[in-house]
Amino acid sequence: MLALIGRTGQLVATRSLSSAAAASASSRALFSSASALSSAHRSSASSSLSLSLASKRSFSSFLFKTPTSFLAHNNPASTTQYNKTAAAAFRTGAGWSRKTNLCDSSNRFKFQNNPLRRFNAAAENAKGGILAFPKDHPFATNIIIATLKTSACDILVQQYIEKKEKIDWIRVSVFTAFGCLYLGFFQWAIYVTLFGKLFPGMAKFANMPFKEKLKDTRGIINLCGQTAFDNFIHYTFIYFPVFYTFKEAIQGTGYEKTIETVTGKSMKKYKDNFWEDNMKIWGLWIPGDMIIYAVPMWMRLPLNHGLSFIWTCYLSFLRGGETLPDATEAAAQLDSAAESAAEAAKEDATKAADDA
Image (cartoon, rainbow, N blue to C red; front, top):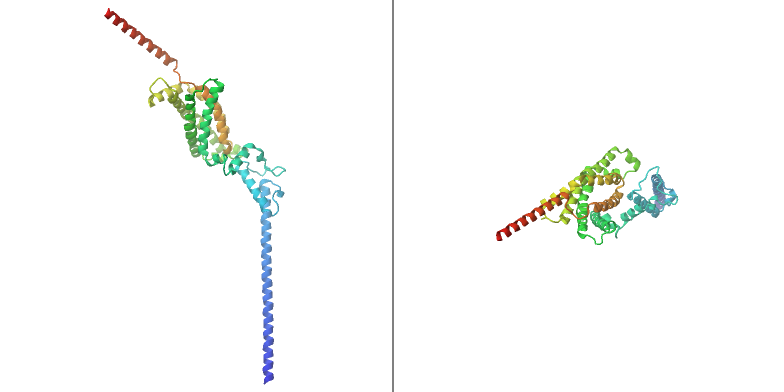
């Protein structure tokens, strides 16, 4: 009996050890499978990352025609710097194409050699200082530039062209007020707000490469429309009437100033100078506008103010002098004075005869 019990216990123990060994082997096999899966996953992820980096380098090289050595292998800092440089290229209007290599042999963008684009890039990236102000406050910047530019033009003309010994500050005030209120405030509404609604594709056309502009028929029509509106509507029926009104309101003398008298005299003077004024402004601004409205948007404001400086100097020289009566008015005043003197002499003679 004892022998049977011992034999049974031995069989049970043997089977338990076999089961434990089998379980242990199964666990090891399961762990090996999990390790293999984990290794395969890591290998797959690594391959995907390498493929992604390689694709990124390949795409970047294709997009910007940049040597792949520019992107250091597995170097995030180089990649970040490259992306920043590429973004700056787009902001500064450098653009890209499959046939244009934006990088020279030294891996530096060609737009860095352009001072206007360097200035614009600095303004875009500036977080403080004088370069950040025009970017953050374009409307205020336009008012400041228009005011200072217009007053400076008249001072320069008086001092260096007309050779005046003393600056006529009343005349300067005409150009200062006109530059601030009209060129600063009102023209912003015309060129930014109104033109944006009348010609909604002007910014897209302006930022196109020159060859693409030649193919864009709609953009060319809008370009001609902006030029025609600016010269034949804006300058003719708004710009000059407002200028003569400012001039008469500040410089006009010899009569009581009311809205009716100032408007009447200013419009009479503009009527007398209509063709001369408009022919001269059209001769400068029609070709000028064709260039200004065709260049990239970031160049529009500097070119416009540069050409406006030349025109304002000429306008100061042409129409900046004091308001003087024309020949008809002068003759009428002389006749009136002569009649008054004759009547006074006749009254004196009659009075002297009565006294005698």
